Image (cartoon, rainbow, N blue to C red; front, side, top):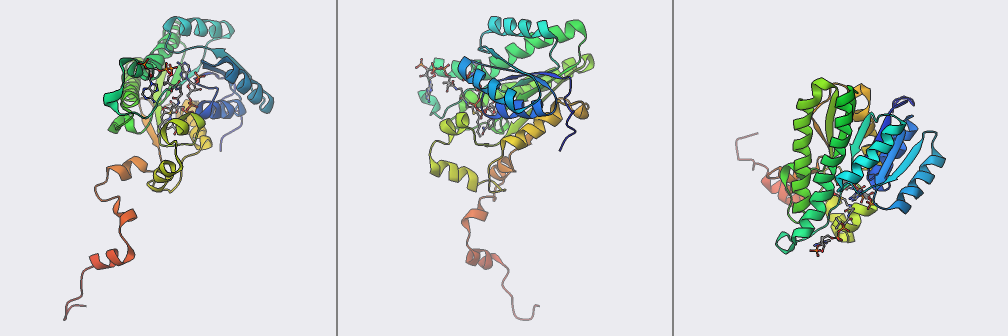
Length: 284
Ligand code: HXC
Ligand code: NAP
């Protein structure tokens, strides 16, 4: 799909890059010639991913244990990365989420998710951007949100408010920093099977089937599809895309919004036939 040197010479940090979509993006960026840094809280998971991807691809990968909720720890991580040279690309992908009835959530439950998703994104973006702006270094940020950032969603309220905040941050900074060479965009994916997301949000086969059946394409997205879109958006080829949120969900959220969309799964052939106009005598 891309020239093999699309990201040659680019230095990229992916938060939450040890697992799931972050790992998939790391693999694709390495294949396209980038130097990739991944961070997360679990040192062992990061080390495993570093070893696995380092063996499989020609690019260089480095792991940095770091909790993105902690602004000081983030600044220290960014400082160690900058010692090798400035980053060119940041992907804010780390997240926390779970299903719960909102009235049952404790303050700490809200804080846990908002801390990772919204505060974490702010911490890493600010630590990089201060350095980019100080030195006039051109760069791009890609935030991974989700389709319900724009609609909201029952049972994942902390995630919905956090992701909506990330999209507002994306649009705000795209305008504020655009003329100083920093591009900001986001991808809003629908469901893509990963252990982290599906174990928490679609934990039973019937929930997974329900989610798949309601998608217009009748399937989930793939890690490869997400990684390809991400590669395009962080590359110089998309240089005029700024402040946008690209939805990648097979049309799922649109079908959820359409008043009559669910009829396709409810009405039988006979019921559709009964809706057709009846022929009256004299008409053709
Ligand atoms: C209610 C819960 C809860 C649950 C945790 N809490 N899980 N409350 N229901 N299921 C509460 C705890 O009781 C505690 O409050 C507070 O949240 C913090 O919990 P900890 O376990 O101490 O937090 P922590 O170790 O920081 O873990 C954060 C986490 C965890 C978010 C709770 O799930 C995590 O680490 N997730 C990271 C990976 C992840 O979530 N990936 C999925 C991303 S998918 P109290 O008051 O008891 O102390 C995604 C979009 C998917 O984001 C979209 C699909 C379409
Ligand atoms: P995942 O595998 O659980 O990824 C989340 C990553 O974030 C993990 O690697 C985790 O590593 C890291 N992380 C969590 N808290 C952190 C913290 N405080 N500091 C640093 N890293 C932290 O889930 P995923 O499905 O790949 O999700 C990736 C992104 O896609 C998320 O932004 C998610 O909201 C978004 N998304 C996913 C889907 C989907 O269906 N898969 C759909 C829409 C959007 P540690 O636990 O080791 O810290």
